[in-house]
Amino acid sequence: MSSYPIIASITDAEQIKHVLNSQVKRVNLMTGTVNNLKQIIGQLHDSGKQVFVHIEMVGGIGRDAASIQYLAEEFKADGIVTTKSNAVAAARQAGILSIQRFFAIDTSAVETAVRMIKTSNPDEVELMPGLMPRIISEVKQKIKQPLIVGGLIRHEDEIKLALDSGADFVSIGSSTFW
Image (cartoon, rainbow, N blue to C red; front, side, top):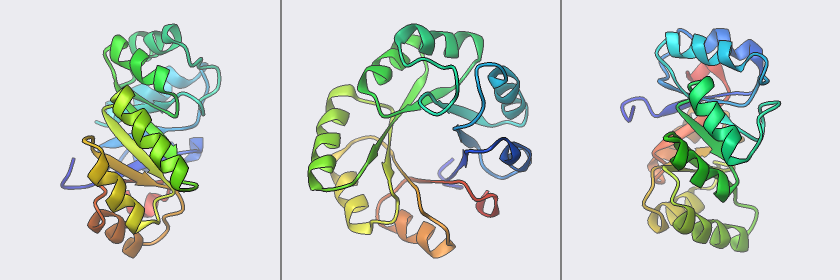
């Protein structure tokens, strides 16, 4: 995937048809409900995409270990996106991957996030917003996981700057970049 470091961030069901034939290999799914999730994940898998479900954004998905186990077994999600450390542990128990997302609102939030990441040990980390080259570089030096950045990125030069600053991947909702 490193040859094409863009992750499609799907926040609206209309975006699904655009991602199916895109170059991206991975989707962070932030739309849908427990009622249509199996169909959405199936479509995405059929088109060769790896699907990470944002458990706090998809309707009807709980944040407890049983819900994450169900997500893995019944919906065949490849992984989860979450802000919760306990969900990272539940994903590991369920045998799926995890992305721990955090918001860099100030220095204290970044320091707290780095400590949480070291404790919870997610497979990947997502830093938001993704328009902070210095913070991207600093976080990348402090964690061992691949770093995804996302949020507020709108232009190709912003994607390049994020990658040049140390991000491994960029999560973006604009199908122009998929």
